[in-house]
Image (cartoon, rainbow, N blue to C red; front, side, top):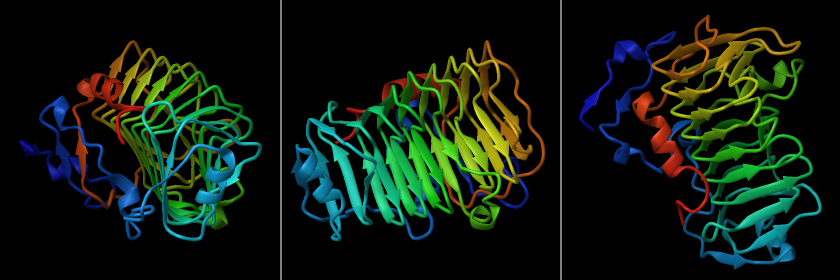
Length: 312
């Protein structure tokens, strides 16, 4: 990389990790970054021999296997209920058309799970629900037209990265922490990185955060978000960094609904026909190194790289 951002700029409450400024749009990487690299890292099914599934029964059997598995999804899988995913799994779509519909995936009491390159449509509960789970990477999916959360992370989950996804035609996009009264479980957990996601005219929760600190929201493109972008509540600490906000009246704020306001630090964001946001307080240091694209380049980088059909 051509240069490093000043370490002084990256201090929040203590010395933070180094962000390396990408010199061009071509420098954006699809490799795992962020919190998913922590707690031992996220490798999913690793080097297990891939199995390709094209029926619902085969899909359920493969993702619930007790063995480390790489599950390649071909075509459309229609689920009749929220389907549990076991530990040590890579679930990846074949091509750009692999689709999960009807219901979504439940990563519950699991660890080391990767979900990539899938279209989620018309889910009846959550598209991806993560609870009591660690080391999860949710990457390069396209999610639209669902009932409740697109990607909800809760109940003491930790060390999660949500990257390069496209969200559209949806209301409650991403919840981090499900209840104001769950602090006993959630304090010290719910550490998540959200980067290079495309929020295309979605409404709210991008994300809505309780308790997690630090939560890192960087290099995302918010295009025409109708209600609000990021909300920090209930003791949370959220770093909102290097994002591109366009036609988004309320990019970020503290407090939401009945939830108390919490800490939010914003820096190096780019605003086009958008509000300036509300920030305050301090956020714990980011423990990992990461690549930071220039905020003014984020729209073109994310629009060309987010969603399905970009990885295999």
